Length: 182
Image 1 (tube, rainbow, N blue to C red):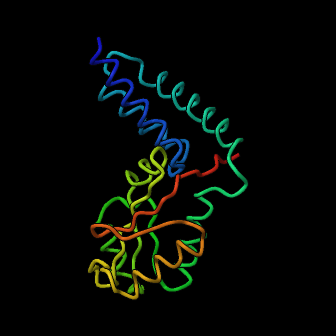
Image 2: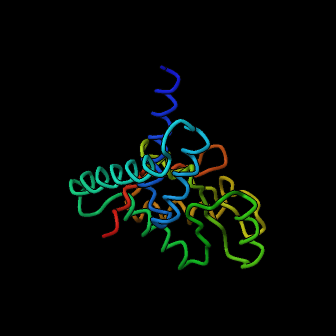
């Protein structure tokens, strides 16, 4: 019984992060959660549980968001990303993987590519730290001393976010406080 309880808690935590990421449409969200419940919790009515859990998580998200400050870390992140895009970077939020980021870099020839996965967003939902990959247009990783890295760190600083480069990624001290849509 304890195993099922832990598994249920893990799935529920994933649903919470998935909802708060705000990346999926309601239909996509329901499909993903239902599919996961069917795969991992075969003894439950996946359709009912998915609908209930999503509704509960959206309700909790709305309640939490009502107490957030007028400008959230997510707002600051979006400002930083918009600044990077104005400078010729491509920003890929919730990018599936490095292959997808590579394909975009090759097709657009940007100044640089700043990208992070959905899993990175889930970490920022709960832990307040978003890890952002930063590449040159060639897909070579940015490194200390690169102008590209200086520009990215400057964009985060200008948006009011603390960020530093560590082990090939930019660690941005930010919660993913994306507001629920109406």
